[in-house]
Picture (spheres, rainbow, N blue to C red):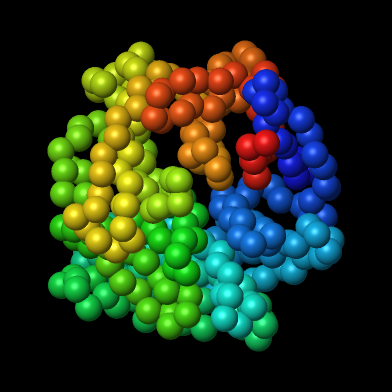
Length: 288
């Protein structure tokens, strides 16, 4: 497997800047995180690789094993105060076994400078119940904290983990978030320098033939629930959403079946650009 770094030219074509062979074997990288020049590959539930391609070095980590793990969510963060990296690992459990009560999630933090794992308390003062599930996509690092969509028995919210004080906090979702039907995929992104929630919705309950609509809520002021603003983007049918480009806030997606192509969509004017390149394992994308 290789890391291919691309740049988008003014004519919307893509040019390859560099190609580096990933120096370890990954059969199934379920989580890939990138932060401040460092990559984190999580394979299965316990095997993790930290890789710095600029110095061509990597580190293999083994995390603790738990009984009946259903899902493991990872996040990579840069601790600027200590010039250090941290990995957050949140384990959700199978709860259709005895006991019947959902099992609370367990969290661990790895610190690169000490090369050690520690258990951290997953408690949020504003919540009345235990956190029993966390979204499967890698945690989003933004504003000095890792963010993920989390669930109690009757509540959905954004769980943030402050890298500095190592405390979990709640960020409430937009008040009208649950108004939408057929939400089959959602994730957190950084959109034009702000925390944003993206939900992909089908216009009807046919998951194959209906057109896809994207609702994006942008938190204009970090941590202020009243600052969520909503935007609607008509996406059409697409295969995969990679994320938002760094400068313009465009969506990078892939379309097609026999020939897969990369596209970018501007959510403001809903214009679409075909970048005339086959899909690759894109880990970093920049606008020229």
